[in-house]
Length: 259
Image (tube, rainbow, N blue to C red):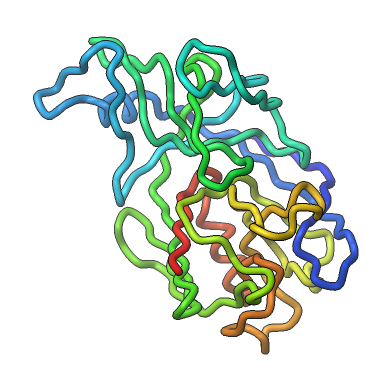
């Protein structure tokens, strides 16, 4: 595993100032063989050109850009969005894989992936040769009505905590997303706390914010506000909790936000 650092700009500072953070970038090992096995049918084979769902409650797969990547609405047609090798924050472009188109031998040719762009939850197809594949055993679930967050690993609950969520005017979006980047703030005592997980969701209202108003899970310098609807859409947790989440949660981890 190789690690690098760079500087980026944060997005959920409710005091209206930009926040400089340091990013941690990790390049993980390949997991193409487990994904090919997951794409097999009930009798062990694949139908050439057919798409199969990929992932389960206990295992999912992330696709990491090898270089620049083109995403297509349909395989082989004109691409509708291009992604650089690393995003604007210097983090390796990461997708969550939801389906695979394979050969008869179950070798993937295309992946259908969630994209870290608006509208929330949009998917597209990327060529299998353009990405490396990582198996992910973690999942995050957020319940907005209960204001709780649960971290699961291999189907087992390993952490549950209370959270702060978006206000009625700046709500936290609901849906199925994934961890698209991992950030370490330069000031661990600041409004983001010691770490942040960028999520592929965007604020439904703050479209003019830095980088379009992306949502994150991060620490806080106001822990007494946890359990309340106080943020600009991000999900806040105690600083000790975000340190545990950050250590346990790789890029590509599914994030499900319930109303």
